Length: 391
Image (tube, rainbow, N blue to C red; front, top):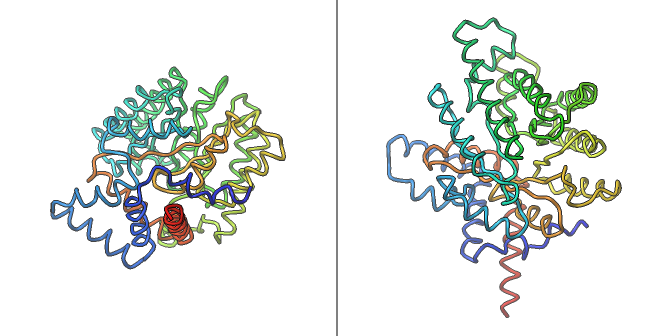
């Protein structure tokens, strides 16, 4: 089974030779901390100066990590993925929303995605980012149990209504809602809200999924308590399990505010946390559905071995493996080829407004050097394979 992810013919079947080479050089740029920093900083400066660089962004990072500027533009990718048994999850990747008008626009976009999504057509999941529905500062106040003003109380009611309206519509359309995690200092308010949503909508079916970031040292304990609470209260858990995306930000916040660092002390500790959590969830499938959001081949293999040992079918409806568009195609497409449930996260949005997401993607790939090296290695292997097959 260990060679399942080495089949580059399946992994890159949809890419032309030119696209492969472009992908290789993009990862080469991302892998270099210096070039990465210069490139992302240059893009930010040029956009502020209103330089006409949208075409350049589109032909490089945007086309690799995003599927279009609109929902309509993304449909080609969704249809092509469905042909190879890979489902899709559209992700409106506009970040930095700060106004009530912006929050309502985000809500309308999520409701629009929900309206056109259909499990039978390869779009069973809808993802929402909590800070797209409300201010981070308000989530922080609620997390710290700080007394809210009348205006803030009204804003918090609106936030909750946005969440409930999305879940209600998703439930009626037989869809699943993935609620993204946020930074640890605003996560407690979100935990309480998502638990309320799961208690409401996850009685008969699992509609709502909480995202658990295992790079935080206390999340395994939280997950165990959450599972116990759900069993006692009588609802089921939807869990999107990830390692996490805010390690540097969390560490800096803890240092500046003279707080204990909530991050696991090492990558190895994070890996152990993740694997223990996944093991726990797979052993409790009668009460849990798990969305495995990991680009780590070793963790994925452990999950496959555990499924085999427990005689869990490859296409068990409560297990799916998910990866970002433009990354880990060797895992996604080889798993799908073997009959496992696979979902690709498909970011989309106006190019200029998606730039923060693209920059975060570049920074995260730099901090995970082994990931970019692995992507480059696989691309090189496929280029060599194609050359040999032509002889």
